[in-house]
Length: 171
Image (cartoon, rainbow, N blue to C red):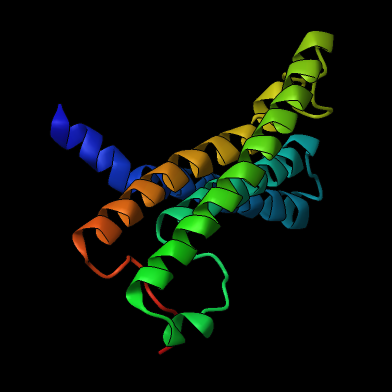
């Protein structure tokens, strides 16, 4: 059971991103062919692409938090000691967790209101809740990854190791 949980911890966002990306590209390809070859398009294709992109964005944000790949200005980090660097990362994770918790609450509230009134999408005619849940799922994943990051940073600080900074895009 442990290898399965470890595989999910390592790759869950990647697999979800792959599924939504394939769904987005595949549906977009089909819709372009239908529009150009058959002079016909569907409203459901546009909705699938739109909602797949929304899920991609929110799950991708959680993946970026896990890898510390979000945009940051780290010039200051080059001039401080490793302990101060770890403290700054911990402070940043705490602030981000606070913001994510507020956003999670309000986005979940929106989804629950939609469920209460039974709103449906225009083209697919399925519950709007499935698509509104992308935001609380994304923020929930972010909070989970921020907790992991916080614990990793505290462990690194306690053990005297350099804090995990993620992969750099440019060196």
